[in-house]
Length: 115
Length: 112
Image (cartoon, rainbow over all chains, first blue to last red; front, side, top):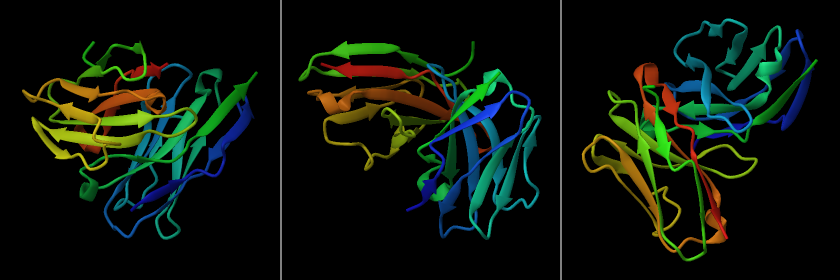
């Protein structure tokens, strides 16, 4: 079974600064997808960024980028120019076809952006 | 709004009662997923459907949990004889292009 580990339960960053959230996973599969989802307080889960394992190029979405290290099974999220609206729980998740494309989530990192 | 919707958003029930939650996926999405999220944890996969077929149900937490998607559109998740440990957020998601899941707002259940 695949496991997803987020080792930072809580993090804090000042507005306009950069922060990196860590995620490691364990799988024997070669084809899979990795995601970062954001869950603001009392609001619904939304996709931040996705990465396909067969693509070596790291995904980027505006201020969000990932550092995907397939051999190390590491998938960190970098948030640049942090904004107050980035305050949320961030979940790393793994998916592949063997599980019917169901998501396997880590426990999450609570990010607080301070003025 | 063409996103995933869930109803009700909140449910308070007494232990031993049955509850049913509804999920309406994005209309063109064939796959629908149910997750449970307890406080301070990531969502935990429960079951999923491809159209009306339930393709995985071994991850349902007990035989008190059941799900249906009779016409391949909306889905329901039922919990019978609720227990206090069932208190959680129940999330629904549908699978779109590029293997991306889109989540609804969730149903928060409190069992007294």
